[in-house]
Image 1 (cartoon, rainbow, N blue to C red):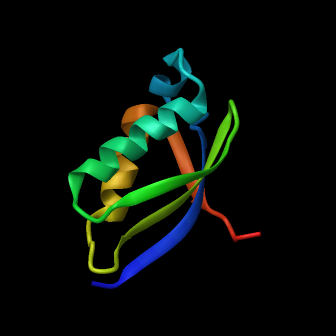
Image 2 (image 1 turned 90 degrees about the vertical axis):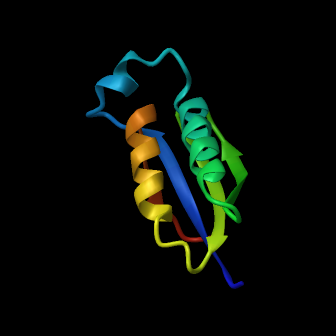
Length: 90
């Protein structure tokens, strides 16, 4: 098995009704989305790199053959009212 890794920045989705109504910090909702994403398929994981009230930076790892990782992540982000984008390592 070959793993792939990416660093992603999660923030509140400014166009999300769910996000607007959330009483959680954006980083808490991002962790909730990541936890649900992680348990859907074996070999998915993440490590928090930076945790701020309004943002979360994580290192995500998954099997390189995981064809549903992106779709699953998008669905969980919508459910939790957050968005994400890839960032370059520093």
